Length: 155
Image (cartoon, rainbow, N blue to C red; front, side, top):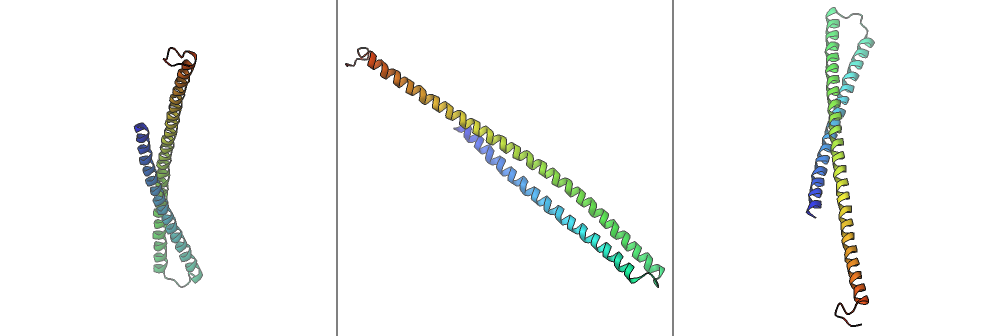
């Protein structure tokens, strides 16, 4: 039974690790969703700013205002580019965390299979032992019935 207990302890540990990895995946996915929401906000703001600029018309604006607008839009596009990098890196982290989780799930499934096999083996050994005892008892009974004088019993 200590052999089964060690496997059960390994399963408990593997289950805890798998659960930790699942939580890590959830955290990284949440971070990715947050980064994507920020990207959507940046892109929406850029589109809204451009639309507002176009609606108001460029007539009567100074060169300085045009330069300011283009610099602002350039900085906004730069921020969008940086956010795109954040999304890419976070996406890679999600993939990596999912791979680690999958490996943990495979390990846990393997340990569960080992436990099931060992339990089946123990049941088989126990059945064989019981069968051997039954066979020995039947042989003794048969010997008593066929040769009562050898066992010291009278018919």
